[in-house]
Amino acid sequence: MGFSIPHLLVVLVIVLVVFGTKRLKNLGEDLGGAINGFRKAIKDGGKSQTPANNDEDIEQKH
Picture 1 (cartoon, helix red, strand yellow):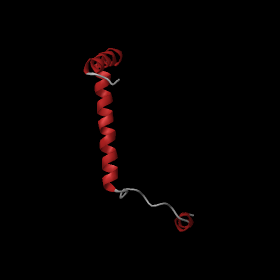
Picture 2: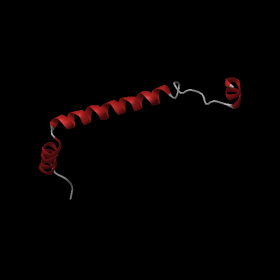
Picture 3: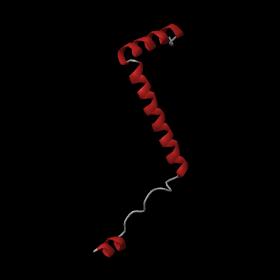
Picture 4: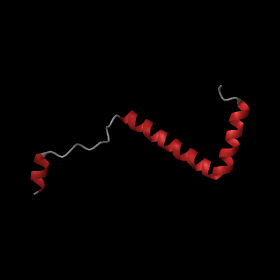
């Protein structure tokens, strides 16, 4: 009892009617940007993270 092509097409048409093509386009762009950001963060490996402040840094500020 899996989904066949006609079932998936009916679901796609319902989604298009409910959300509209503009909202789905924006959702796709947002999802793509999030995936690219995630891949970039993994590739960087945390190089852009700032080091945590330790006690010496706090004492120097006072």
